[in-house]
Image (cartoon, rainbow, N blue to C red; front, side):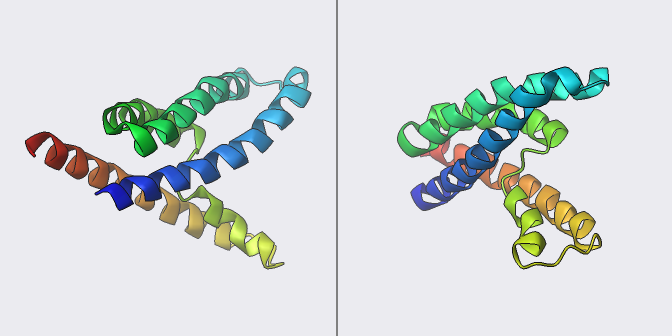
Length: 131
């Protein structure tokens, strides 16, 4: 169980790294965003960043905080595309393949991975409470 939670924390650290790059871009270009829905998404990225950071701390040191943080994060993760395996959508670009056919496939894999993570988190939380 501890290894699983640490693996989730490591995935969230990757998410924090990529979110940092996104937040810098949002800060620089916030006044250029025209659509209200895009402004709402951009604004929600800041509290989401804090929630993910709290979740990483919680998964490493205090399981209860990590579980609660993830349960709060989950709907926002889906809306903001802050997915645990989201970095795999960048793999084709890393290998120099800029073909657009891979992104939809890898995004679906990321969403499936997020639901698997939710299932494993609930199962681990249930087992921790029972023990």
